[in-house]
Length: 429
Image 1 (cartoon, rainbow, N blue to C red):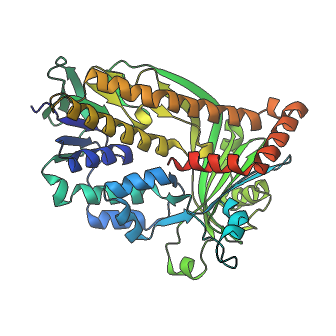
Image 2 (cartoon, one colour):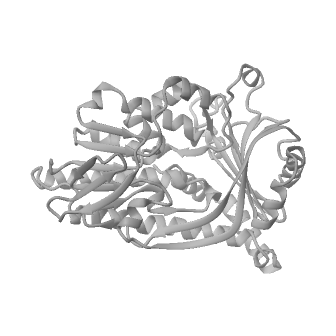
Image 3 (cartoon, one colour):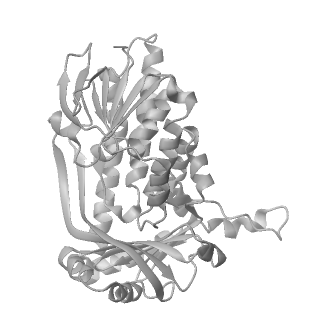
């Protein structure tokens, strides 16, 4: 076993991205994923259906996908919807925040005053399957094959720590055993790696359920990601890519919806017919984009936040949803996981080279990674929980809270440097 060999459990977006970063740096890595391998026909079949879910990729996440060579595949697919503005408003109070339009006021500083600055991209909405396919296409390329081993369709059934010098031996359901100095858990919220390492969770159940669906609206989205802060929870209207010839002839009318409601209310609504749900949804948005003409791919999921009490153990590290999960109201869950990848890879490389190419995934390296990421992720998790508390629930509807909320949004919206700072923070760069 090579002392700089890494084993990643979980081949989702975060795990696959880290595997590519390591292989590109010529660091031996094995990626194990429990899902079955898809052939091209299977991929194409899966992609014929529009997914109601999208990831709001920040500029930092896009840059990371560019570095590993996957963003180029996403661009070629045409299945992305870039957005240049973010609009946040509340229906029962004053104040609106609009990110991305601040440069309009600066146009007079241009040499040619007749030319406005082009709208800058704030991020891109991409369906999960599109990102996964782009990454798995890259995992098969020859330039990474010498340092990358991919095992699909196999679950990990056992993990044995052999000591700091040897690391872990992992057993798969087919009986195969793999040894690695560093074990990376990228296997989602219910992480087997985290449980086997006896790492506990801090959890917060919001008693809310998110309804997600794809809708076609009467008005175009105009490359704007919208979020209404309602007494029942948040309602996000996120641009979706136009995938059919009919869509492209009349572009920017498809949206991905994430509608947060109290759990009982959401479950009752889900029992109704799609047209009824569409009518309620349009009314909840105050017909921001007009009537809803089509609705499809209706699904739901319960909302809870969680954070591992530790991101690390001897020869073991957690990234992405295995380490943390946040409220979806700001769409930052995947972006936080991608920042984990960036930080972990940078620290592994830095300490490996500083040690004269002898230490890989040392205890010091992992502790530094945890210090970099856990406080930041914790701050984001609690900030999103606070925002949810400020807008949803009985206390949030009392007059003092409403006044504080409205005045705060109004004042913040008037401070352009602060708005630019918020936009930079959301972009991750």
